[in-house]
Amino acid sequence: MVSPELLRRYPFFAGLNHEQLRVLAMTANAMDVKAGHRFFVEGDPVDAFYFVIEGDVGIIFKVPASGVKQSIAGQLTGELELAEVIISHVGPGEQFGWSALTGDGVATAGAVAQTDCKVVAFDLEQMRSKLDADPVLASVILQQVLRTVRQRLTDLRVECLSAR
Image (cartoon, rainbow, N blue to C red; front, side, top):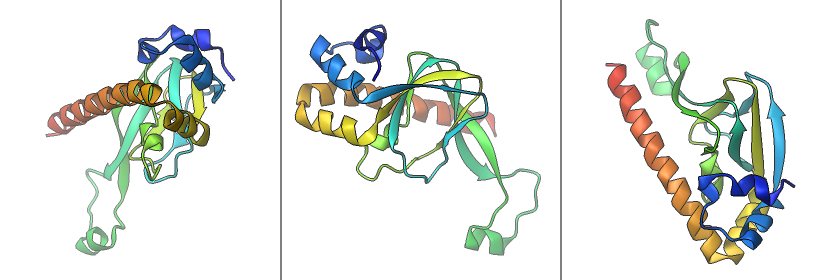
């Protein structure tokens, strides 16, 4: 468990009362990870929702490697040589692993610590249970997650344009 006061410091949790912060804090644990730590890769089941306290986490997509001759057969079978591209950086006060809150809980991208980090990991099952029990809590958290999704789509668009 983390302190509700830790969560209160961040705008992401604005709009939640003390009891709602306490309930969320009970589902969470603080983690210290080293640079290079892989939280998950695209397609993995995700069992936690993360919030960055310190450090930088890169959100990563796998794309066909440039400068490598790819065969048509490889394209058809999905056996392409891939490279990882950081499409977004997540820093203090921001969250990642939002796909954990969707029905299937499958990662839509990867996440790797770019620096040593301190993150709060919210247990997926416990958090979903708390969100189901309190529609106001669910509304506040999901509105914040939607803001993040919007920003990630913008980051992806910028990354695509810069690759041209």
